Length: 288
Image 1 (cartoon, rainbow, N blue to C red):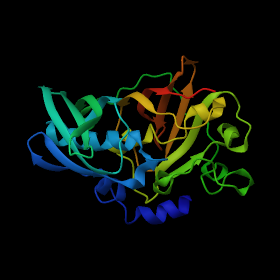
Image 2 (image 1 turned 45 degrees about the horizontal axis):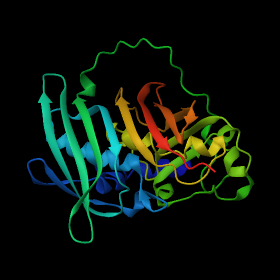
Image 3 (image 1 turned 60 degrees about the vertical axis):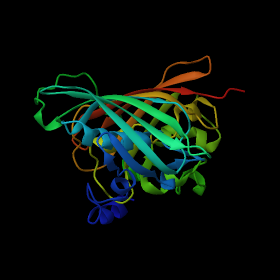
Image 4 (image 1 turned 180 degrees about the horizontal axis):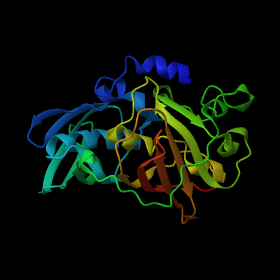
């Protein structure tokens, strides 16, 4: 898979890849953007939440004077479907180092009325202007080498990983076998998921694709022993640095499932062992 990704990387570049085309927005007027949600980023019948966040993130990058998302918080109101959508943005405040804006994505009902799908509040800055000083106790996740991890088509036993969807074809996702018990019918009971991550066409990661990465792994609920759709209620992402070229490592943990909800805490590490993104999301689970 690494050889395949390397071959693709020659032709898929930041700004000229399937991800860029499928998250593109067209400014209709100041603060209003048209977009087309692609069916290629769906899970079951719904559009992936990280992909949606990247679409809104791209609109805010155009609307705000700073280029990079530093923090973005999203509330998912209704399930999005492939097809036309409109993003409406509002500049809340602009400053020298940070600017803040909000955005909502709307789709249409059968009578042409707008339905709000997702609403976000975000602060943007310039990642290239941040100081190099790093003081941290965080450590990259211990994941086996990529050729010892498993994707949708090469899971243990030769059977595809359950729950495949259209988004799988657009990702280079290799799961740590220690978090794959759910795929073999023997979940560990631990709320952990770890994987190598990239885009299937070889495009390197950038701040916008990090918004996708934090929501691209199978839910930790699978390894807890639950199955079925785990819809996101709220997702907050902190982008800490511009990622270096090469595959990312993602670790997600859940410590608490209660009242039909669980949290997922994600860390994303780049090829230089830097923590480039963190996130927390609240998910609803179906029990029983």
